[in-house]
Image 1 (tube, rainbow, N blue to C red):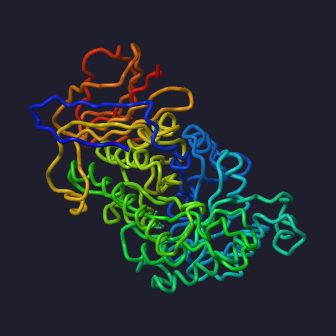
Image 2 (image 1 turned 180 degrees about the horizontal axis):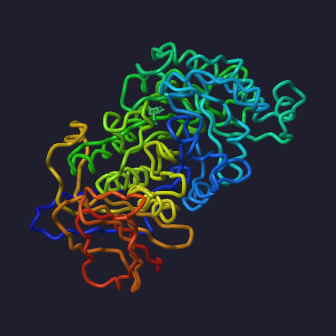
Length: 507
Ligand code: AHR
């Protein structure tokens, strides 16, 4: 949570931080990832048998190390749009008997060489939790129940035994399950109306929870500010479901998913575009309250959180999905990613999970080549946030000038502020205060009074570059992290077009 006071360019900017004013716990799952059968994400990304950088499972070891380094707590799979024609049974069992299928989301061919057991194994090696998305396109409820049984059951039943036959005795205990992906989208195989989706999601949710009441179910929302979001939440938030073992203390769905990609060719509309994501979180939060009020859900029933399971900078015209969506990220995009992440921290109260889309090669911070990895510009703010911006979000007031030009989407202007200094702060379990500041101005360094910094040694991490257009390539890493210290005295200067993370031990 942060408040903003707009000042004139001629006035002194200031940031006031109250580390003892904890607002909400930051859920570690906001640093989640996403791997879809799309472009070079799975094949050639996390899985590349035959490459000398891969292990005996065909998993790229350098990618595994990067995921560990990023400390990714949860990874969504197998789509995305891909999932709308995915039959999980095609991807289990002996590899030479798995069928190849036409793939309709990205117009390719799916070999099914990599499937459920490979993904589960990969998650175990990485040390991350799987999050599976169900096929609401061509899939059936029987298939979905079979997949849940295959993954989670320890009973002597058909699909649990099929898992054992395929070499895995213990259940995988997959906790997170999504009720479809972007079912509202015209690009979707078997696109649905909100009425049809809500009916199906409700019935599937009930059956899935009867089979395994321990799972966390994620409803398919849209942007968080649409009539789809309102309607499906209203129909599915109900807690009073006959058959759930008479347990009236639980709700049917546990999270509501939203997706937003932003992009603009001009720097300031690009860097401030993720303010739309923060406004979307606020609106989704209100819709969750509204659905609970209208359904008379008792306050003792846990309130669904928001699962922002696709977010990033992406222009699908610049980097088309059918061509693998290999976006090249600039410093401007790194600042946009910082603004997204700041928003997740500020809105921590509502955020149950977020998954950058995607984690390897496809609109990703991490790119593989045959002989190594490229860390794109956006990797660095993501890495710093994941390493330090955990714990509790704390109260913050920012006095700074505001960017008042064109925004993308245009409704950002008038619904949420777009300060030149976009900030969030946390206090970690280790007692360190972490202050994240994106200076999105292309021209101006800001000398800022930092009230609340009570330390004579402040660690400083800066992500910047010569211009907002610089990119990282295999040959040259123009954007990375510079480390320094500050004695906590006087004003601190946040350089133009940079992201700075300040860290000090709270006294
Ligand atoms: O992440 C790329 C695609 O964007 C996903 O498959 C889809 O869900 C979204 O439209």
